[in-house]
Length: 399
Ligand code: ADP
Ligand code: MG
Image (cartoon, rainbow, N blue to C red; front, side, top):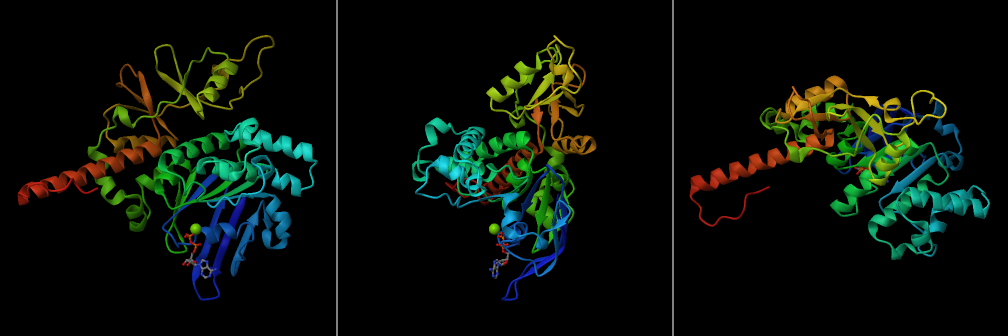
């Protein structure tokens, strides 16, 4: 869908922001670009909608060389969300959201209807928030409006440049989860820029880890965490120390995600309604002895024709998944299972024999567990150091 071919950007002052970059983003894929400030992420992104022109190489959208597409027409196919949302202060939330449909010449009523639909989709009640002005919203709500606005004309591609960077961590996690759920429904091709590896791992189908103007590794979250391609990547994800910790850190209950649980015999309609009602993106499917069978996306459709007059059940739509792991197994094993099954999550069970489901381990949670373990290790060392030096009343351990 988006393809970079040996793309270079050298600014007038001689700075090479992006150096002969080649990569491809598949249709419906969410790719996160992650790296430290100044490594060329924003430059990369702006070359997709021609806010910046490359000095070498080509960018293709859906097979078309974008340098041959009129920038205004090009941008209609690309939603763009940035951190300083850029909402018009003197226009209401609904009007802001309807900006692009309006520009595209939609009838006013249709544009407003579409805007209301989008606000609803990003978790803002249009009847409550639609007539407010941007300054009357919280930071998190403004970001949601930014996302709704970018999606309003239903572009196939979405560019997001640190969209959740300015909100506090709790709201941020909330927005991330909501966005993942949204993406499950709209399936856009997304390039998402962040400097936060945690966010990159949580959101990305694949991750491009940037060094200085170049991609050091372009891979699944599990591979970036588990098999860093270069020492730079290892350092960036904290895996240099992490790999050692992986072997000695067990999977604990606190590490597990608890998505909604559905049963194979349940009517599909009820199950998906419940998943949506709980604000989740997917559910675990368990048999009557609580053993995991697979998972069900929030927007699941039956895989085959329903028998007329008979309710379609979860069984007909579930996606089998047999990556599992007993509680207490080391994180290294969890990572190995994840890689082996190329799975976005693994089911953690009480023990191999009964196989009773306890919770789900995702790459994001695995990485959090690893980080926690590294911090605890560092704290232990600091404490040990303090004990040795017999320093009384020292401050708490360094983090
Ligand atoms: P990131 O988004 O990863 O923080 P940018 O793509 O914004 O990085 O910038 C990459 C490099 O290009 C940085 O060294 C930055 O200073 C430089 N740069 C960005 N914009 C310009 C510009 N208009 N002129 C000169 N240098 C620039
Ligand atoms: Mg940037």
